Length: 390
Length: 234
Ligand SMILES: Nc1ncnc2c1ncn2[C@@H]1O[C@H](COP(=O)(O)OP(=O)(O)OP(=O)(O)O)[C@@H](O)[C@H]1O
Ligand SMILES: [Mg+2]
Image (cartoon, rainbow over all chains, first blue to last red; front, side, top):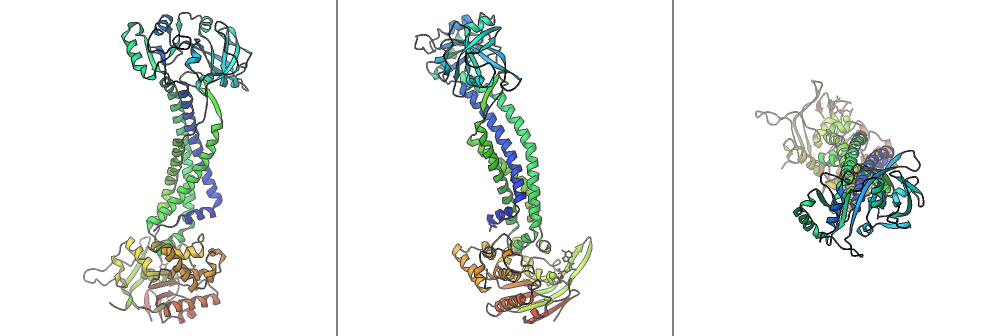
């Protein structure tokens, strides 16, 4: 009963320029649409990769992230005695007292300052986060003013090369090594000895947070219970490290998505109007053909379907083109401020199957909306009037 | 069953243009027996195309008559009162019973000769193989089997009209309506088209209604009728 699709496709080919421009418009919108989703997904992936399933982060109650949190030293010592915490190779609990602060560094190639997270850690930090691996130099020496620098900071900021010095809290710190961490958020940090960082900051009795490794990831509830029962822990809040970082990504990812979708919707109105104009022209050019098809016995709905399919086909091609170009963005890493922690975070655009399907679905929707009115006009034509149009 | 393939009973057609009534056909009665080749002549604007469209079921006459006079504005083709068919049923009916030939051929430019001829068969339940056989037979009939893969713009006007004739007969309709089929053709091509139409009548027993301005074309018909000022005469 249907008019063959080849009829629609060949008609598009006879109007190569308009078809091309329409496809370009749709492609642009789908490109922006996919890029935004890929960005939001990239942020989320980077931050989620930062957390470990079996690690637990502890903060002062009322603190949403590490920066404002105060974690007393005596509580940190008490936590280390809890039986749910794993024991490391040296026989000590795998736990890191951490202190987090932010320094300003100049970005390479610009005069912009960026916020860089400095994390003071305990010696167990490397065992706590095995993804952290040195690629250049050596580990900093505990007890000295030395740091190791994450690879994203190393490649993006001035003065962050091996052997150079960074200013933290008024003192000069030598860069002893560069590290990677599987593309996670730690690559956007500078690590040093927690005790040394605290001295610099004149902050002797409180850390920012503490992160511990559980014996088993199922032990979280047991740890929570144990701490709830002890009044000395009543100011402390615990959270799985993975969930903590996922939460940190939420604000940023949501912001990117909303901003991006608003921009996309505005663009898509333009692209849909483009598709609509193209399709109206197509209907006008083919009025006699429509009359002929109807005379031969094709129904109104076949005519409607033909023009709608033509429009959908056009947008789908545009969608594929846009998606293809967007997929090239995966090779780019960008760095921006993460609202959750106000520090610089480097991440890549990441494409997922979901995003690809959404992008194509979105292009089909634009095709349907842009093509509907012209297709309806084609279907509503009166046979005799259409045939007289010659 | 009557042998009148086409029966028009007191058919009128009035067009409205800005609340102004334009009577085009008034009270026309006409019967066309099965297998007849009828030519309709008349001055421009006399309503020939309108009459043909009514017979072909792509246009509707004025409102049906009252109970007192039910036989007004009735068009019966092959025993079916077209006024009783809804739009969708009428479309299905046309695809089964009507073959169309237009002055400007009305081939779809993006389809090959083969695909153009195949169009009416897309509305049937024939298998792929049967469709191919029908299309090839129709193109053979018009002598264009070797031009199957050509697009309309690669054909001459006469050849295009022959493809259109193949399209009109491919689904084996009983009636063929042709609106000035030679109106856009040179003498030689026009003669070829008329020879073909005559063969459709004599060999394939088609009932043909043709509108023409060309007296030479009308000569080939069984019967010629004249339409003037909305009235029909022999
Ligand atoms: N849709 C319409 N609305 C208003 N008037 C119409 C419409 N269609 C046809 N007419 C008028 O009806 C009259 C008959 O038209 P028709 O096309 O049937 O004539 P014709 O005999 O086929 O003429 P020609 O030889 O020029 O093709 C004309 O005056 C035309 O202007
Ligand atoms: Mg006419």
